[in-house]
Structure formats: structure tokens, C-alpha cells
Image (cartoon, rainbow, N blue to C red; front, side):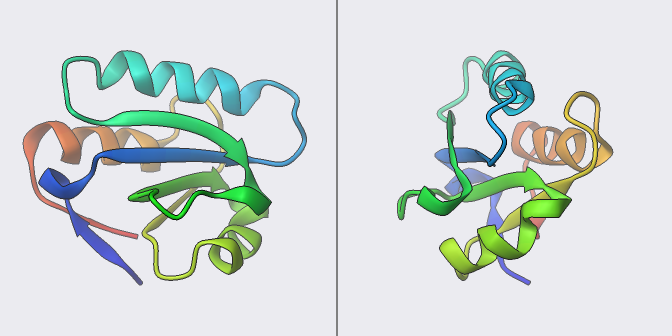
Length: 102
């Protein structure tokens, strides 16, 4: 399990596979929730997670592939695209400070 301090998070990557648009909506929601912070949010295919990602978000079904593509990066798997508790916890930790253990 990797961890990162919230103050060290500058780039979140939402990784997807199917291209159905749900993960794009999640990335947009995160941008709105983190507006005014120094955190950027990008959307990428799970097999092309950039090396400069600080935290990776992906659906639980893609977690193994994301770990293989971005080993050692904190990975936050989620089950639902909007309102998932794991995503909400990540946002709250970034806003209030603390450690992301993922």
C-alpha cells in the first residue's frame, strides 16, 4: 500500500478503459471539487497512466491493470462513478490535510 501526504498531491489521474464517459464525468466532478487548490485532474487510459501522477483513481475492475501500469503510486479504487465513499474521502483528505493511504 502506497501513501502520500495531501500537500504533496499535485496531479490526480482518473484511469479508465471502456470510454463510456463515466470516468470523464468523475474527472470533471473532481476538478470542480478541488477548484482553487494546486491539484490538477487528468483522465487517461489505464494502460497509459503518466509517470508524474501522484494519485490514481480507477474502477475496482481495473485496479490490477492500474497497479501494473503505475507501480508504487497510491491507487484509489472506486465502485461507483459519482458519490463513491473512497473518492469523497480522497477529496476530504486533500482539502483538510492528512495522509492518503491507498
